[in-house]
Length: 191
Image (cartoon, rainbow, N blue to C red; front, side, top):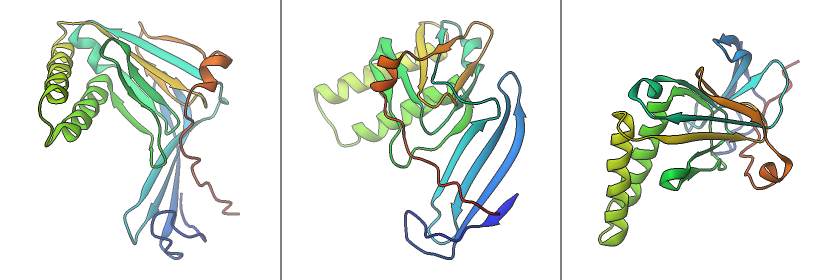
């Protein structure tokens, strides 16, 4: 269902270009959820998030990725999710423009690689060397020759790694307090 939204765009403030698309669907092994996407036709701003039908409990999901087949495991990441690869000291926390997405572990690793490549443009010396070593290790992980843990920590419980070997549990209160929660998706009453 797509609807016009009577509110200004949070990016460009245009008050006539915002629309919201809500779609209910089933993600295998994740369950029924609603995907909400808010779009601005004027500036191109877009925000997507996933809301599970069965309620939300702060969640932790992890998978030890030690073979290339595991890089194909499905990942549902909401806009409130922090992603970590502890062995490489990598972390992405949700920011003000964070969006949800569905991908696989290889896709998550590719996003880390793209972010690192962006950061090291124009860098020299130790920073560049360290970043290049991390990029090399990420490629080795994708090839299944080194194992690392991929962790999803979501205070809203909307994220999950879908694989038989994945570990899922509720977040402890002290873990939840340390996490950013990302943006609140602007859900509008269309009634």
